Amino acid sequence: AQSVTQLDSHVSVSEGTPVLLRCNYSSSYSPSLFWYVQHPNKGLQLLLKYTSAATLVKGINGFEAEFKKSETSFHLTKPSAHMSDAAEYFCVVSEPTSGYALNFGKGTSLLVTP
Amino acid sequence: NAGVTQTPKFQVLKTGQSMTLQCAQDMNHNSMYWYRQDPGMGLRLIYYSASEGTTDKGEVPNGYNVSRLNKREFSLRLESAAPSQTSVYFCASSRLAVSTGELFFGEGSRLTVL
Image (tube, rainbow over all chains, first blue to last red; front, side, top):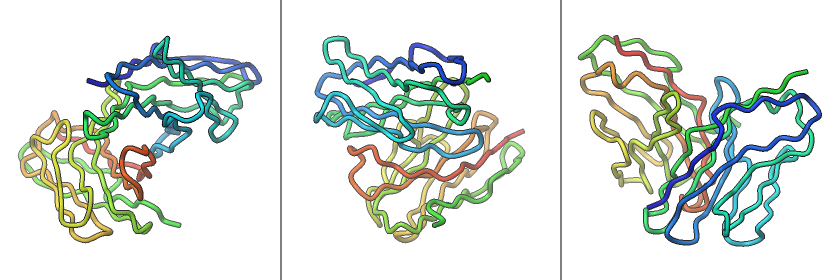
């Protein structure tokens, strides 16, 4: 069975400082992993995806994530936070045994302070 | 580009009433989905339609029905609304197989059942 755990429900950073949003996954097979972002009162938007190619994945708006199989992690990072990064972020896993259904984490709310 | 359009954006129902949430996409996508989002729960799949003419249950289908009216439209019906169905509902579509994780979301429909 597949699942994801987002280790922090809320993260607060100052503008210009690094962002780290943590995600651990559980999967019986080689999973596909994704990060989605949801700005207030908006739908979700795909930020980046890992599908067994390069372990370091670059996404939109300067975000990137590294797939670490030994640690079963897929943490999202950004070198310098911008005010517009304030949003809800979801880690998502998909694997063949579940018909490739997307399994969403519970989300991490990122607050960026001036 | 309109993308995925949901109507209505807000709705208040009384217990036992029925209603239909409408969803339309203009991207010529084959697959469409209905999710519900509850605080601290992430997104949970209600129903999906892999292609025109087919529908399948997701993780939480009880109390809901769906219709894939044509390639563009995928509606979600609550036959007898219950307070437990108070949620934000998201429609999504994908051009490629769901395993790619590349879903395009509408802006959501906020439903309150009293």
